[in-house]
Length: 402
Image (cartoon, rainbow, N blue to C red; front, top):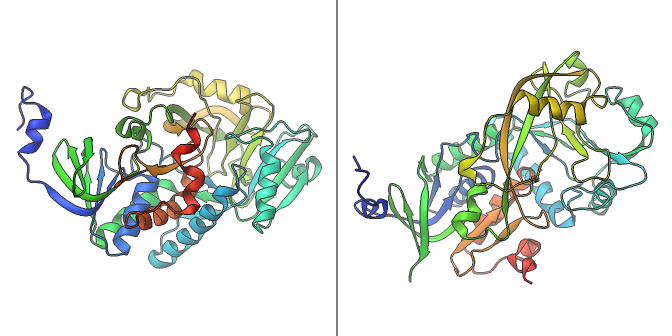
């Protein structure tokens, strides 16, 4: 047993180092997808995570995630999410696991505009534009038609909506667990409950120091989520924020069943936080709803994980009441997750500054999960290449250069 008086770095040297062609640090949404694709290609790979994924400490949990092909965040994401849908369906066909539930998706906001979201102005209009440019079937709805289809919504009468039949819900914990299980079956090594302390390039690769020893890698994919800014020295470009989700009891949960209610993003004003997203009732009793908060960046190891009744009541009174009809203020569970957010709310996929063998990958800013299978596939390809592909150019660090 290690004595507290022994420096951790010296203690780690007592362990025999192991090696792999590629090491993936962080095994959440992107990391699990990357490790699976590497193992599928027959590449010797090790995955390291400070926790035991799937877990509730980071950004990949909470029962459900929205997926949509008409991504209002921008055209750079359209091919990623389309490929991700294909991969999820392939995984379902191969394993019999259910990962994605098609419910349709509704994005709505004031007809007059002012619908900024995730760094994109006119989010409803941009969703329509991306869908049109990428041949995504969709409809543009007025308030009357939305009220006819979805009487659960307390509309004012001046809204415009984008409806996408192919949108739906992905099950994050199940997706991560499946990809890690498949990766292990294909020969990848999982090292869980093992924090990475540091890493440095050597003449022949990368040396990783964990609290349990040293690992030598030919290349590293760092997908550590909220811990990436600190580990990769990217705190100037990515901040971590606490988010909360709330499961409110519904008077008539059947009205919010997946075959009667779509995943939804409702931008109801022009202020920064004037929006709510909600899911169909997956459990047959509650409706998951949340907004997003970016008030104060924090240390991912110092997050207040408690969602107070007052916090849930405040979200209900400001966003839910009068909009999701029949959804009461009683919260059954509530939970937190972490968003890693860049100044433009875009992804980071690039080499770690000062290195040639370490790629940082953050599907961040609150809209990453839907793209994670395709990002994993791309990162697995990048792990054996010398160039960052053109498809990832929009996510490079150079866009933040002064």
